[in-house]
Image (cartoon, rainbow, N blue to C red; front, side):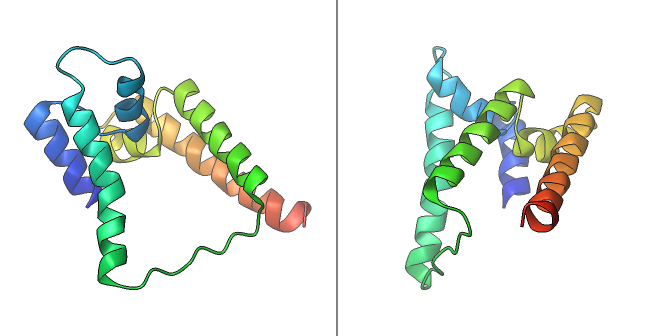
Amino acid sequence: MIGLSAGLTILLIGRVAGISGVLGGLVQPRRGDWDWRVAFLLGLVAAPLMIGLAKAPTPPDFDAGYGTIAAAGLLVGFGSRLGAGCTSGHGVCGLSRLSLRSLAATIMFMASAMATVFLVRHVFN
């Protein structure tokens, strides 16, 4: 579904479906560029809600507290802006367009994720 929405977004309106870019465009909106971004984000929220109505959702089980989760979210958001895109923008859309910048960003995302998991599970635990 992510690949399909990314492909349709680039084919139909010529825009990359990276979530940080879609959301960032709402923070500093341009004329005529607001409606598709709102529709895209509403679809991101509506899809899991509709699936939750179809079947009983499994409650999340976090090993971290709310403060840690909030700090992690802020760091991911900061990294997305610093890296000029997020995992969906670089990993799904950029790699499919054979972007070398997206390849480098995706390698860094994955290396950072692997290092974080290793440190949290084997060093700090």
